[in-house]
Length: 140
Image 1 (cartoon, rainbow, N blue to C red):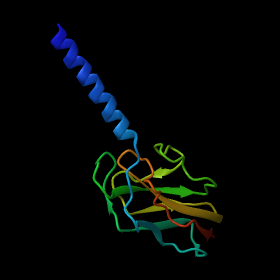
Image 2: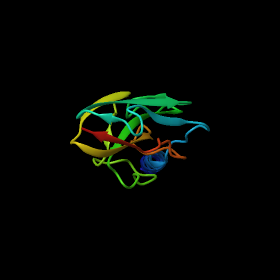
Image 3: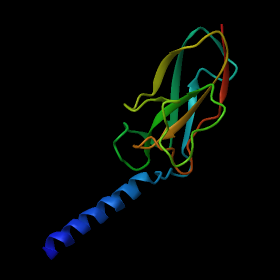
Image 4: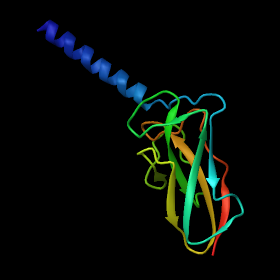
């Protein structure tokens, strides 16, 4: 019985350690950069906008795939605040968990802001965060 309890305690301890490690944000390498290739800041575009993502000094991997120095894109449209650090990004951002590097969005006429944030396999922003400059576009 003692052996069964010891094995059970070890398994519970290992699961706790794994959960703790899984909740830690992935480390971004020095010089990692995510950016919006197009459209560019100040562009005037139609209502159907193709947004092309750029990434340097890191790779793209789908959500759920834990690989060093990789992540997947999250697009923030018209967001005043960045997602909380150390927590998975939620439904208020657009996730590209399959590793997509571009998207098409339909926007109402007017001014809009776009920004990218790279998330790790658990949708958690890296440490330090890898995010683009916020750009403003005008939709006609």
